[in-house]
Length: 289
Image (cartoon, rainbow, N blue to C red; front, side, top):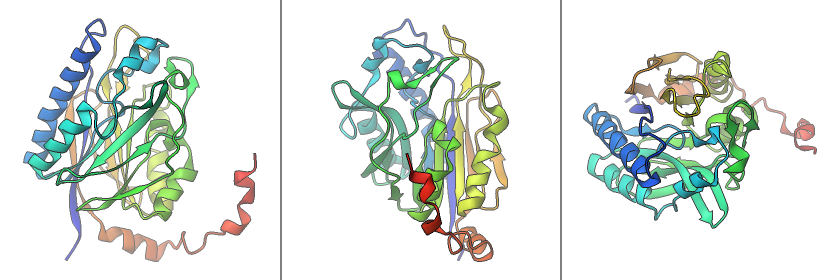
């Protein structure tokens, strides 16, 4: 019997004015996503991922200590606690990307993974941290991830997470495949004119090179007062053959849904024996400083 799993991606806009309190910004973002999660559950989605730091705007467009106030503990902070209850209520596994506080002054760009029974499975911390103009000042906010490239065994599939800028680095994408990922989710915040031409190239290439499905998520809209560009949506799922299965709109808040046949992974890997034919003993130059 085919292993079909219905999966979903949420692309949304942050419309709460940044002049509001951080608590209001977070609460309104969470409430919006709770409605979208309910919509996804009603459509039969079993694994769902939200966009990068979904609890507010992409504040890395500026360097301000005010935004340090958006950090939360994982798994005991308010957002992950709510999402654990939500996952259990709907019977849906959730990937929850938020701004994480490890200890005072040590913060990460992180995604918590919650199973469909509400169990917290663990977290992935973004490894590759950009710091470049215009408006991507991430090293001001995030320490590079230190938890490796874990794969989380949900009730429905084994999943990995690779966050935004990570997608430009094939090394971690390969490790996720070697660690057993069947689906890799990439929650992002990326704008037109910067990397849009790469959006549908890199991640299908990762899917092909490693024989797994990829779910790529981008937010939509223009965020004020920074207006660093248009978050162009177009969230999508692609197959281990690199085929885009379903794609979201450029500017609409929505849940993108696809049925993924996990048996396709074995079919593809038995044709393209990339893992068998690897030569790790010859790759030493990759890790030389």
